[in-house]
Length: 240
Ligand SMILES: Nc1ncnc2c1ncn2[C@@H]1O[C@H](COP(=O)(O)OP(=O)(O)O)[C@@H](O)[C@H]1O
Ligand SMILES: [Mg+2]
Image (cartoon, rainbow, N blue to C red; front, side, top):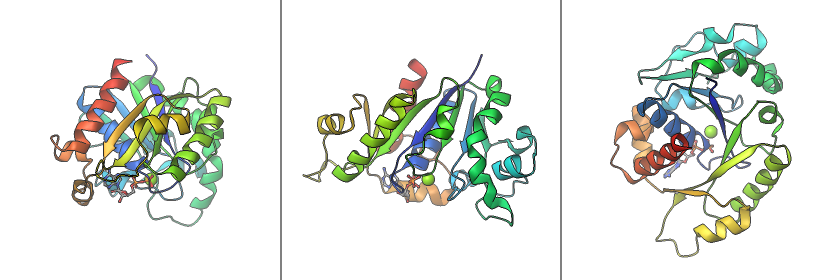
């Protein structure tokens, strides 16, 4: 068995990549899938915060900069079946070079991919697909908010991924609020981005509370609209 590797990506910051990554990972784990979440956003890494996970000794920076074996930087979480490979939230001296070495992420993934059903990669906002296209069999999920500008940028990333041979599983339309009249709708989103499969995640203020508790929202309250959306999304990944 080799893990299914999925990168959560968007050219824009603040659209919900990390929220999507941690909630997909937590849901897959709760569905019994052995899951690893990797924080590959070495500039503004927040995955550990979303899990209230502090005090770890090694991080992805140490793997890249100090040749620490990748297994040393992978930790069990309080969630059954879920492991985390964090990046360091507060950088120490010398950590800066790691961001240029992210291109070698595939090499680290190769070492552990047999231990998991799924590997979810959170990423920095970018069109740079070099670090993902090297990973064998990788797929991507693109995250956007329902605004025309964000959709245009999602389109550019989709084109970039496809021309690099990366399979795009779908588009997350995050922070969707039906009451906003001039939001981008589902069909329009597909037309602009060229991505036919969309998952809608509603605007949900409870995400702030979940973050404050150091829990992905799916673990905080499964009944919330956003949690249900993430369960649906993760369920469709398992079904594939
Ligand atoms: N569906 C949502 N409803 C309300 N707030 C959201 C939603 N998704 C994300 N947010 C908030 O938006 C901010 C940015 O989300 P984040 O996942 O960190 O984005 P990114 O990783 O793309 O920078 C966070 O404060 C997060 O809580
Ligand atoms: Mg993020």
